[in-house]
Amino acid sequence: MSHRSPWVDDRNAALLTDQYQLTMLQAYHREELVEDAVFSLFVRRLPPSRNFLLACGLDDALRYLETLRFDRDSLDYLASRNEFSREFVDWLAGLRFTGDVHALPEGTPVFAEEPILEVTAPLPEAQLVETFLMNQIHFQTVVATKAARVVHAAKGRTVVDFGLRRTHGTDAGVKAVRAYCIAGLAATSNVLAGRLYGVPASGTMAHSYIQAHGSELEAFRAFSELYPDTVLLVDTYDTLDGVRNVTALAAELGDAFRVSAIRLDSGDLAELAFASRETLDEAGLEDVEIFASGGLDEYEIARLVEAGAPINGFGVGTGLGVSRTRPRSTSPTS
Image (cartoon, rainbow, N blue to C red; front, side):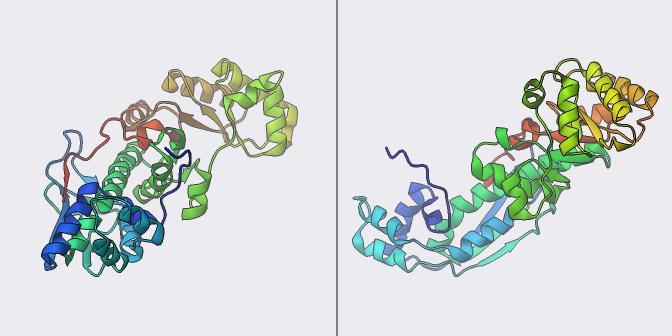
């Protein structure tokens, strides 16, 4: 096996299909089955914990259809396979998508048995594109739906995507961000997605930065000197000691102190948020906000909001990136 790990791009995306699509395509070509067919993408039923899905992925689906073609390398690969004739491979060289697409706009709620997307095209074309369209629409609809639930649970508080390191691969890690933002997320930790989609990239420090310094206060001092309005992560050692180090830094810097928020990343977030707010307020730092992360999803965020925890925003990672409670939309069908 090759050690290379090539990216999927417009040159090779035509091969991102199931083997049986190509074997059927050759059979259709041989039998001259080229009349128009209609393929509908929908879900038969919603998962028990979902009362709607949020349609997403149409932009990538349309780009694929607009640029669909087999390049020379792809054609040479197929020609090397015993099951495909030279005449069929030559026919594939001229294959383009010529059909029509009807679809729900991205961000539209959708329910069971309702088409998210329909393709009307000559049968070989409609058959070939089925796999890619299901792949893109399914994944992006699943994570957009999860993000919509998280945003709803936050009740107007900022939600930021922290999920890149836990998503299932690079394609998912990038395309998920667009789906999240369609659902209402404010920013992402993913720098490439930020560049590609014009989404604000957000992030300050990890525990490793704190541990690289002689003390937590020393780390806070150095980082805030470089980034005055930063968010300081306070739970590397003891969360409330970390908050007190923030107040010590404020006393040290006086009017030069511009830290915008602290971040809680572990422990009982509600209890720690109340205690942190009290400590900050007693030090005259009422304008310093509290941002929470660490194992969050819509259920935990709803619990924190209902408890009245003084948290201004949430960072959500694994719960979004893999749609932890419902990783699929239940029987996507074409």
